[in-house]
Length: 126
Length: 334
Image 1 (cartoon, rainbow over the protein chains, first blue to last red):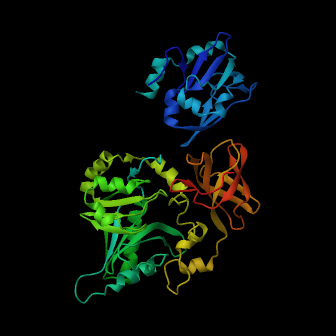
Image 2 (image 1 turned 90 degrees about the horizontal axis):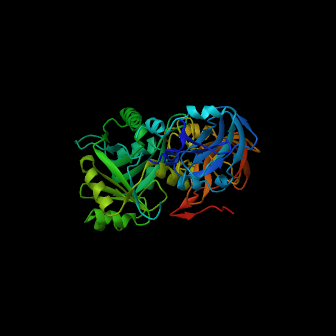
């Protein structure tokens, strides 16, 4: 199972990466893309949208099922990776390269409460 | 998915029922089995004249709702075989047995829970099955679609639920693991229920419990072609079908817009009124989302309707299934 040690995670299968400018990049984990199967549709939040922690703000849909992606942190969406809706299979190919959106968190310290790789490993149980 | 034949235990396989006439002297004649099925099934078993021939049919309740869909095989005048859905098998056997008690008390109905079924489907499926089951080719190479033959202790039918050529092989359950292993060794790829569901939907085939059930008429389920209302024959549900002409229809939808995937239970808006998707998926063969939907009777092939997908309304075109047959796309995707 591919769970990079330098990222943070949520129990709802998002990954987070803190950028040098203080924003946080969000995607879905390799485990999540594997469980969903071939993605055929991705919808991203509009740049400028204010989101609450745990708010559904993106949709990933595979041949099997549609799933919401949740904002892991409260804040403002400052970027969306528009290459992904154009080619959703990029998430299946490399879930950690195909990021979905960036948030400028209201509380930067909230990042510290996110799961580390070991914690996420325990969540998915293998 | 289509490059290799697929093997899959079919959800609709399940237990088999055999309707068999009595062997004791003085009992009802052989003709009673056919007469019983003539009255129990919506399609007409009198279309079955050659031993081994199969017929797809619905079994209705008195109100014309679909109790189940099934395949009936004519083997001998005193022996017909029914393959029903696994999920409805127990209820089917109970219902048929009650009907038998009322109409043909001398006839026996035997659930065959001692049988297993493996479907081998795809362009090379028959050749792979012959490779896996040495000696079966001679018994089955001349089989036409929708017919079956006995071979060894197996019953091999050229039928399926994928829109592809192939066999459905029925065998004693104790033999299933060995046959499965032989098929895999011959290069048949095991296939899960999700892939099977994609294929049956591409083929425009209804799934019982999802596209139709006891609350829907076969005439509102794109199954009028399986219901014989022409002959004077009476059958359970006929009076209700005649008394209630269809006001809805089951059609195919092809998603025109991006923005999601068609799924069961999404609302459909048409110029003639509201409808609902009963099955939807993304078709890998067409690279488009497709669906079956129940809509008002006035909606016509070629119409553009709207489907509510989350907070959006996406356009879809009404098409006539099948979407795909034997790997070839059958509807225009522009």
